[in-house]
Amino acid sequence: MWTQTFENKVLNAFNDAFTTTLLNVRVPNSSNKPLRVGYHDGRKNYVHMLCNKKKKTIGKRDWFFYPTLVTEKCDKKWKSVIIGGELRPELQSAIFSDDYNLSTYAQNYTVCVETTKASYMINSYAFSGSGYTGTSLQRAKTNAQLMGYAFVLQSVDIGTNWQVNITLSNNGVASFYYPIFPYLKFSPGKTKLLLTDISLQGINALPGTNITFSIQINQSVFADISSDTFVDLIIGVKSPYAFSSNPVKLCNKNASADGSIIISNAFYVSDNSVTSAYWKPNFDVTLLCLYATALMWW
Image (cartoon, rainbow, N blue to C red; front, side, top):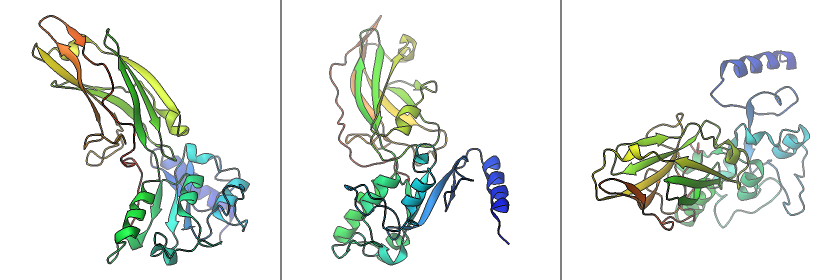
């Protein structure tokens, strides 16, 4: 027979065993609140959360997912643990169509994601049969990209003493829940600087907040580059927990295929010196798509 005591023993055992892997449970309560576990709502857009965002109501049923988070004071845990769910199966085929009618049990997808800070959503319809097509497909892609985090390179300034000042932001709705670091590369050149001493946690926990940091470039990184050469500066982010086939990417509109930003002709290598040839940004802070969104649609 189930008891809260037995559930606590199981959950604490998982919490102690999985120190890296993120865990989710269905129901927030006082027992799991202090643990490193997030929450999964299996009824997204069915009995999920908001009814009227402008009036700041949190649902017409106190057992809706988001009201439960608020009641248990777990609605801020998204800053450190992942939140996700599943689109209610009977709503999956219509939710992105013109025929989708909002009601108490069929709520606005965008509002749900923005309020709960969801990072993933299970949606089997999207990958079964013909799935979404036409306008519904485009809406599904757009709404999928609302989830999770979105790192954006906001500005770069290179001083005459090779100090690179970089500003990044997280323009998504949620955090990135694993260690992540900025890196610099030089082209041509073989040097890659993974800046593991610079934490991006500040913009993880507070999407919409900028973080600015400076890197002093040592002239030795240009040692393998021929003289009379302009050198591009390449800026990106990297997590040791991301698959190499699916890296974390910057979301600027003109990001490269690997998610990095190229600052063309940032430096000039002459016979006996290196100078900064960089004058103005050549990147676009407009989002192309939220490459970094954590998707689990199946």
